[in-house]
Amino acid sequence: MAKTVAPLHSQRASGSLSKTITYGAWKGRSTVRRLTTGRNPRSPAQQLTRLRMAIANAAARWTRTTATTGPGRSSTDLELAKAAAPPGKTWNTALASALIGPDASDYAADWAAWQALPGPARLAWEISAASQVPAVQPAAPPPTA
Image (cartoon, rainbow, N blue to C red; front, side, top):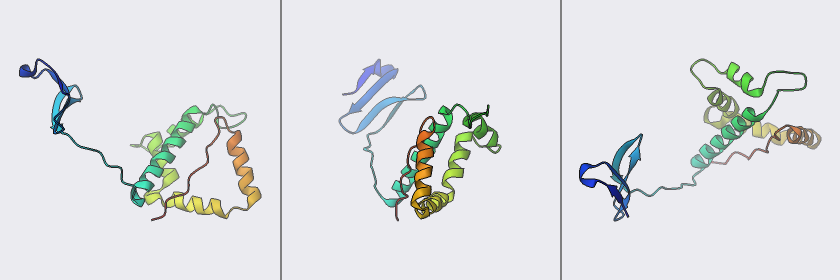
């Protein structure tokens, strides 16, 4: 049910009316739009996009929470990421671009290299990642097209 305040003066309204229109606010302004139902496609392209966003989010979250980059160092990962960002790019965008690459090609190549590691080397990486503060979470394989 739509709720209105002074509807003839168009001061404020919110909610949906008869499953056809929706009243709400956007950037502080009252709006009216057609009611839409979101979709959740599970295509390989959408899965790849979601994977990219998950990787970027995990890397940015980990970068913001680390204290220092290593024993005896005073710089944090966040400071280094900000310093390494090219002009015109935010640090988290630059970090995501470096990790994922265009069309996720870097991620797919990194995943293939990870799969090619012998068991002891992979185990050493996993132990090191788990010992980080906070721990680095395992990555998901890239979706196949």
